[in-house]
Image (cartoon, rainbow, N blue to C red; front, side, top):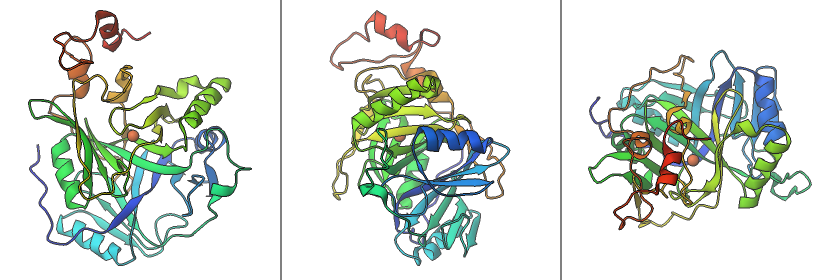
Length: 364
Ligand SMILES: [Fe+2]
């Protein structure tokens, strides 16, 4: 495995929040149907090559770009910074690390001004921008809201082989850890990192990477997520539901995981907690705690652990994937070698009828 990423002398850019993801999709009409007609994202602008979508409370041009392309992948994890000057800092920070850095005064996508794109030391395509076209914030347009309205972009989730290495780099970039999953042997399986004062702007999930695990949009309430499930059932699209709905242990949020027509994973997420104090306590979960991923103890499906989207370099070429060498969370919690408990003080693992649900091939 590669060694630690050095801390640059150059200060990191002051990042405000995750702002949008650029997804490459193979069937633009099918993806537009899923994100607009089914999930209700708002079209800001579109042409034959791309659709620019935003959530109900957003005032910047977009939170999601669907771009037609040959391979389903992620072209950019894009973050807004505090001022135009922060772009110089971003360029200097990544240049010092030897990363590929490109700058486009007109921006790389419609609605976005001067921006910097990099391939970061973990292999992910990151973008930073400040200048952006403002559009109508539809928060008060209740005549347009649907029962499952997506109100904000909440976070990204990235798959990377070495989570501690990724966390150290993200801390150098100015992120703070809010929660993580570890075991008694010192292996870290995942970590949640924030700039805005929620549980995260992105998470690092241990696995073969770099890959994109999911992009998450927030609803106002739990019932909005139930409404999305009901709508998917009514449309005979229940096979878009991969996992949930449920309550996370990590983040305490209510969740639902969907797969789009290309298999890109989308989370619908609501009601995590404030993390903005400087002494916000970090929550560490035991990997064997059966309530860490689902507070009600419902099983995590194997596909959720193993499948993720490729990410592209700045020329649009899929990045090579490096295998995780640390223990996998799925291996230590599911199947013959897995062990999970509900009450840490009990000697017994899960009851036999429940253990079976966690074994590969035992899901009905
Ligand atoms: Fe998530």
